[in-house]
Structures are given as C-alpha cells and as structure tokens.
Length: 112
Image (cartoon, rainbow, N blue to C red; front, side, top):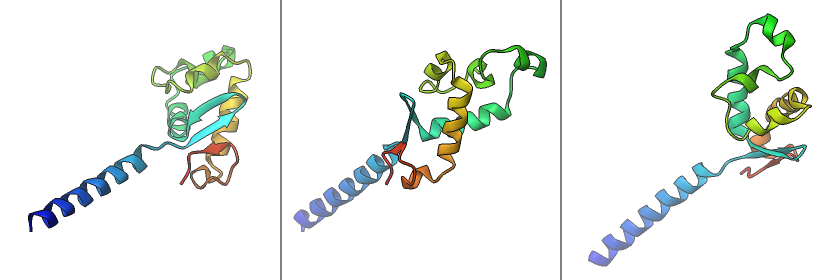
C-alpha cells in the first residue's frame, strides 16, 4: 500500500511540474532582428495609455513615448535605439493582435 501512495504522490508532482513548465513558456515575436515576449507587447499597450510626456514634448521627441517610460519591459528597450522604433512598436502591436498565441502569424514562436 505504501508503494501506491508513493506512486500517486510522484504522479501528482509530475503533473504539477508539467503545469508549471507550460505556464513558464513564453510566446515570442521576432521582427526586424528583435525578439520580444508577447506579454511585453501587451504591456506596451498599457504604457502607451499611461503617457508620461505632454503632447508638446511628444511632438518634439525623436523616440516613441514608451521609450521614456521607466516600466518599459527590458526586452523592448533595445528597440528604442532603432531609428524605426515607432514603426517597430506599431508592427509588434499589430502582430500581437493577430492571434499570436495560436501561432497564426509566422513571426510568433513558442506557441502551444
């Protein structure tokens, strides 16, 4: 009977580990040499809604508004060094909206 209990316990532990492993896998978007997490692009949308710059400063700025936000995810920060940062952010948001989690878009990897 002790063998059954141990076997059941091991099965439970394996199931928990599989669920944890699956939840830690991230969906990535690869675009113009940048690889970012889908979750980061979703956070980008929120940051744009919380604009930290005045409209006047935004008009004078060379970088997109999210580049000035201290909460910009680390994997998006290198995009701010690109001259095409605004268009890259726009493209990433478009890709994220096209069922990236289902791997419908070829730019998405790591989907289930």
